[in-house]
Length: 368
Image (cartoon, rainbow, N blue to C red; front, side, top):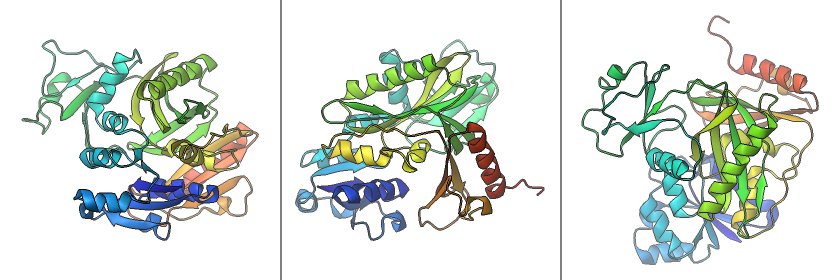
């Protein structure tokens, strides 16, 4: 089948690299100014602005069997236009909700899935919400990796943020949560409604950017993992979702809260590329193209370290059968994800030691 991918980043790259051995081909849709180095030589690339007319769009989609996305920050009007002429997975409604923090939180609450307390910045409650740890204001439709966010300690400080005059639905305010750790669950649903669930992943962030992940987590009780998988399955079925959906969560004193959703393959699932029966990328492709999903079995413990702002490969990663390095071909600049390193071993202590060594080498302290 021929797949059109909306987006040209590393997620598009890894999806199509997984699609090619399955016999699929690809085209890519890019925005003006979007870097396409990640998908160079993987298929035809076309500007969205060149597809404004129905004739141009029909011509582009004539050979396309299915369309998917690598990000939720997309032009929804365009995505819905595409859905008039070709199957789009995941469906545009799910992409819209996951791309808007207010709609996302409201949907989760309506499905009895626990979330943090929240309100619209332009319509605060009459009585101040008590939050001992403070508040975080987030742009509803923009921002990732910690961007477009403001953290404050008190209710009064919210009024001092440079957000005066914002409209309803532009910014959401959430109460800070005293969580024990962060974790995510990655699941994939096919067109027949079958679900493949990946092992829950414990995550560590630095400056709002995912730094490292490990699975399975020895801190996550089985009951809490099963609860999170139940919630994710509920969302997948509620939307009639096809493809990978990721749910990022907080573990809070033996319970859980959902932080946010991603309607796509996810950074915390990159560990699945290394000696797993089927990576998140392969199963996403299987799902959207109508193929049978593969149960994502693996042995031992897996870890992943992001390469952010550096593509220097630590010496410990070289010629080590427990380590796999993936570079995206992107130029290096501060705060930019340019690759990741996967680690595997039967011993969780070995995985932790290797991740510690890799992190120390990639992110040395300021004082050396």
